[in-house]
Image (cartoon, rainbow over all chains, first blue to last red; front, side, top):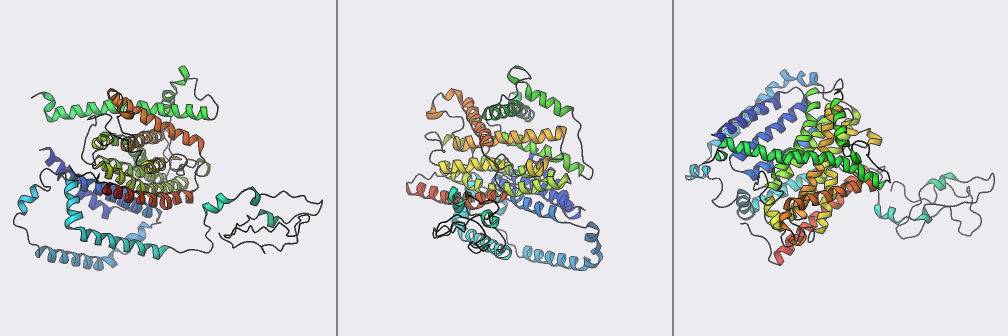
Length: 246
Length: 334
C-alpha cells in the first residue's frame, strides 16, 4: 500500500519534472528540474529495492554531473528571446531527429527476446540472502568484468580527449613551484645596501625576485664578482635574470 | 500487537527519535558558535563573549533573537523562490544526514545497508545551497563565491570518495554500524593514518572552513555567496555551516575514530558520550585550524586537491587493497 502510493508520487513528479526540463523558459530552472527528476528516479530505485543504484544515481548525477551542468548554464549569458526565435525554422530538423530516435527505439525493442524466467526474476531483483550491493559487485567484477573495464577505458579516452582539446600552456601563465619557494632563504630574498648619498640604486634589479637556477648556482645580479661597494647602474636591466614566467 | 507496530505507530516513533536527535543537535550548533568565539578568543588572548548570562553562556540565544527580529531583505532582481530556497536547503541537508548516524550500537534512526553512500550523497548535495544562493542573489560577489565553492567542493569530494573506499575495503561493509564494529581491535585512524589526515583536510574544504573559506572570502568577496542575505535566511546559512561541521566530525568519528567505542574499549557503557567527546575534539581542531592558518590562494587549493590528495588517496587505496590481499585479511561479504 505505502510503496504503491510512493511509486505513483515519484512517478508523477518525475514525469512532471522531465516535462519542465524541456519547457522551462529559464535554463537554470531547467537544470534544477533535471535534478529533481534525478531525485525522483532515485526514489523509484529505492522502491524497487535497488538502494545501491539509487544512491549512486544521487552521488554521480546530482552530486557531480548536475553541479557542473548548473555551473556552466549559470555562466552562460542566454538571450531568451533569441533562444525562442528560430523555433519555426528548426522545427522540421527537430522533428526529423525525434522520429529517427523513435524509429531506432522501435527497431531495438522489436528485436528484444525475453528470457522465459524473466517475469519471476522481476519480482526478486537480488538473489536471496545477499544485499544488492554485494550482488551487483559479484556480477560486475566477475561475469561482466570485461564490459566494465571497457566502459572504464572509453571514459578514460573521453577524458584524455577533453584534456587535449582544452589544455594549452600559455607562455604568460605563471606556475607556482612549491619546492623553489621553500628553498628560498633570507640570502636570496633580501639585500642590505649601503648607498652613497645621491647615487641611487637600480630598483629594477632589486625588486625582481632572484631566480634559483636548477643547478644550484645562485644567479645574483647585485653581487659584484670582484667585491667593491655594490651600486646600481652597472648591470644592464634584465641581463642576468632567469627565464621569465616561471 | 501493540500500537507501536502499526504504520502510524512507526511514524510516531520515527518522529520522536528525530526530535530526540535534532533538538540536542541544534543546541550543540548554538553552543558550537559560542565555543568557536571562546576558543578563538583564547587563541588571540581575549575574553570572548562574557556579558550575556554567566560566562556569556546565553550569547547564542541573544544572537538568535537578534537574527529573528531583523528584517528579511530580498534584493531587487533576485530570483525570490530560489533565493529563499537556498538557505533552507543548506540547513535541511545538514539535518537530514543525521538520520543514518549511529550514536551507539543500534541507535541510528535508519540503519540502512548503504549508510556511507547516503552520507556521501547528502554531503555532495551541500554545494547546491551555496550555488543556488549565489546565482539567485543576482550579485557578482555572491556569484563569484558560488563558483569558487562549486569547484572546490566537487574537487575535494573526489579524494574524499577514495578515502571512503579504502575505509570500506578494510571494514567490508557499507553499513555504518558494521564499520564501527570493524574497529573493535584498532581504530582505522591508526592503520589508515594518512587517509585520516586527507579526510580531515577534505572535510575542512567541504564545509568551506578556514583555510579553505574562499567562497566567503570576506576580504575580497565581502562575504561571498551570502553577501545579500539577512535575518533568518542568513541565520539558516550560518546554522547550516555549523551543523555541517558537526556532521563532518561525526562522519570522521565513525569512519576513523571508532564511533561510540572508547579507547581500548574501556567503559563501553558510555557509548554515546564517547561519540560526542570525539566529535567535540574534532570540532575543537576545526576551530584551532581557523585560529592558526591563513587562507589558501585559489590555485593552491586546487593544486592540493587534484595534484596531492587525489594521487595520494589513489595510491593508498591500492596499497590498502594489496596489503589486505597479501595478508589474507580481505573481508568477505557476509
